[in-house]
Length: 361
Image (tube, rainbow, N blue to C red):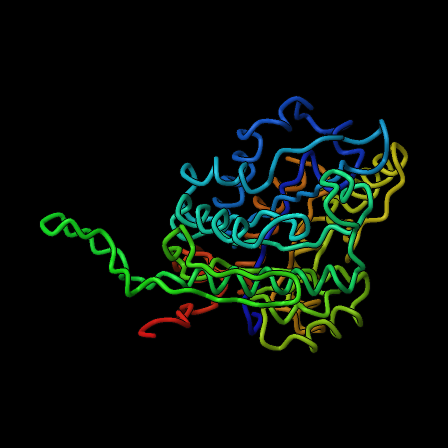
């Protein structure tokens, strides 16, 4: 038995993380542009009691030309659409923090938290290419350093805006005609390098108080988030990221190719790479579900991460094996919970209650 239980999230992007996945998946390519496609995988992850699903997004088309899936649905809107028909799984869309306004990011994520009844998160990423900047023609692409610093400001402003309504600001007193207690709404008066935001928000404080915030671990501003996802491709670098962020839940990205036999997994990997060679970001695993169930706790013990962000190569194939065989094996080893203990994403991740910085001010 292991000493700690892992946190597990899974990516449900397109036909899978591998750019050739759409060519061997049983899923019809047209389904990739339907909410039902993503609902299917969110429900599968929920049945396995995984902490959350992520859905990638960008202001640019996927790179790779005609051989890859091009085009995407808006991640936050898609997860908002499936939120009412899921019950426990956390929903974490990627949201671009460049060429957007933190006021809009804050209210959109708060709305997802209401739609999901407290299961929202946000993976905040900057937009750094000239092609993306050209879509808006308002500003040049930022440097990586400025993009990260701006992302940190977006997260700070979002948190302040979520707190700008106290939890009991809505009184709904029909007899007096008083819907809100105006004294419990607060200006945030944020003045930063990139933004000046007065507030308060137009959306009441979300069910979680603060929806879960996440960033990738190569950002120097990762301290601004609840969850840090590292895409380091070797254990020493993963360990270094975990050591740099002791106050956050650090998760390591692992791209997975699974089969019932090790040879079968290698054959699947070769088939995918023959169609389109590809090196995924983060750690990689090719093998059986039992081998992955043994490897994940070992990697966590060696690096100090709290868990993993898993990226199936092909959907639904690798997610089916993850949910149906890897998770039960982890449970049998004491490395994963038997079911959900709470109802919110913050509870799943053990983040505790979000304190309102303006309460009583």
